[in-house]
Image (cartoon, rainbow, N blue to C red; front, top):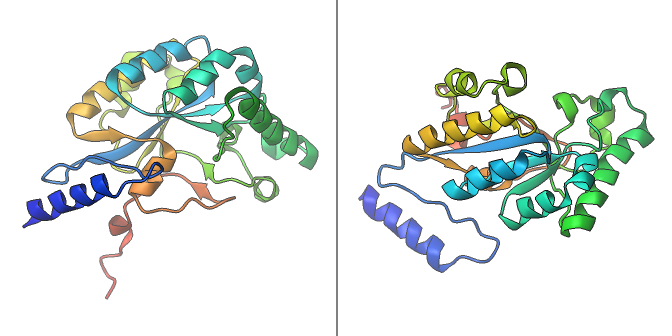
Length: 240
């Protein structure tokens, strides 16, 4: 009966899909785990290498981009969008927003949006503040959802692909948002090592927006998100 039900769901998704409707795969045992790999502080001279690896594996990711580097690597930025990855705002030059005045915060966000839109025609719909740092004053000036992370791979500290893999392979679970930085070559190699192993363990890699859709979560402006747990996982066992 369960198998028939899943097949029916798959049939309805396939034949009632509109252009903006996400289709995800389902196994008979419903064992697929959905996660989002995110990359901060790019684009960089290594981002194209990462994009090559993601394309080879048919994996989509989310890139939180710096405006000043988008100006430096416009063709890489265009490729990120062209190949179906999601882009997010990470500020213009990685300034700590909590130390900035209102007009400076607005510059960091608005200037980056402007640069990205001018180059790609697409404006970021999500934001990750530099260092993941924000306060109430910052929140008042952010008009998009704020996406943080549930797992920091610490790639920025270790700069060793094998250690990145070893330290994180047993931590990642359904609904996680995983933080990397594509400005380090070791991070790219470590991320691809993790992807190869996780794919064999029935993980599926989605952009932030698609992961939220799978988990039936509507992203709200000025609200922080650390991971996307299934609504079923949020039900208290003591609930009557």
